[in-house]
Amino acid sequence: MHISEGVLSPAILIGGAVVTMAGVAIGLKKVDNENIPKMGILSAAFFVASLVHVPVGPSSVHLILNGLLGLILGWKAFPAILVALALQALLFQFGGITTLGVNTMNMALPAVICYYLFGWGVKSGIKQRVFITAAFASGFCAVLVSSILVGFSLYLTGEAFLPAAKLIVAAHLPVMIIEGIVTAACILFLKKVRPELLEEINV
Amino acid sequence: MIKEISGSDSIIYCLDPRVKIIIAILFSVMVAVSDRFLVLISALILNLFIIITARVPIKEVFKRLIPVNTLLIFLWLFLPFTFAGEDLFSIGSLTGTREGVLFAFRITIKSNAIMLMLIALAASTPIFTIGHAMHQLGMPEKLVHLFFFTYRYLHVIHKEYIRLVNSMKIRGFKPKTDLHTYKSYAHLIGMLLVRGFDRGQRVHNAMICRGFSGKFYSLSNFSISRADVIALILMAGFILMLVILEWTQTT
Image 1 (tube, rainbow over the protein chains, first blue to last red):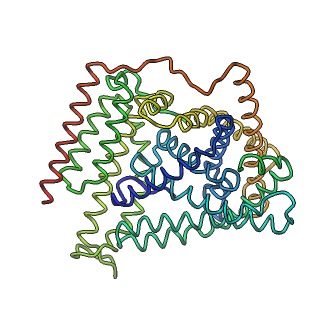
Image 2 (cartoon, rainbow over the protein chains, first blue to last red):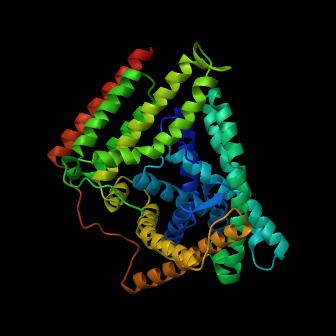
């Protein structure tokens, strides 16, 4: 869901950069020097996870997993996503310098929103059904909000983008469902295998 | 596999990374905000020149421009028809406008120009050097550390991922559109996170044992040479020229 370079208007680019800077500042405040190696490796794991393509009918989509990231990292999702996108830009040229702010905002803000909306649901001692629903909702909503933000960034640049913006949201509907399922299954797996991963980092 | 580009024996490779980063940022911002075709096309030509000087293999450049341009094709399918303006052509009941085509064309040039600059930067500067240079340019230390660790473990985790995928294949896993597939992938990612987390713990302990004090030291000291000053002045002059061109044409 990257917006490529040269599309957006300067105002949107600046707005995105400002929001991202604020988010990264808040996120970094919550990071101990102690936790940086761990966080770096988790960001790397998410980077790799976003290269995973899962089949949908005849075609395939790649996972985004910002909902999962939000549940595990909270505000720290901002620096993690910024670093991952910067590396994607440097290594694969997906996105560039001027769109880094907007693209980070579009992915990380939904992650933080989902953390506040559904984070309480994925703690230990919560009923299984609620747990799964919260995890699914987090994966689903993160992509939904992301696609809406992408659509808005385009629409605010020019009204001519409106059909494209609508199409982006619509095209991501199957992705939302898949992300919901994958996030729920993944969080459930982590709860069984390594429950402290859900408890420890997101303080 | 995750691969970097290299163009390691060029003049640009020898420039101070801080200078390169500043130039790349200024240039990208300039291109992103300009609208005149004259400005954009001269920026693009300048960039081609830089790419040639950076000695990036041409095949590699084209390969790396593919993802950007696939996204652009998507915009070309839309913009000519949704942009209000003078009619230029029509397909069935759809009419494309002159303004829409120009708009799409402008975006295409902008995108490619900014990407070429990024390719030149990435090809001529190792990632770790970029990290150190960003730190010297005032990026928060924590963010730089995070950048280093993420980059360092990208390859490790990616190898782990390939290993897990292979072991799934050996056990007869075929991806389909069903719940089983999605669950298997979810568990695969869960496993990556768990192993990453454990490895992070071990790495951290090992670093503490070796006296890690929260600082990274760069072996190469950056210093501004005459070539850097010349490059900076040349590029700043060129960017300023573009700014003036853009500004005087619009008023």
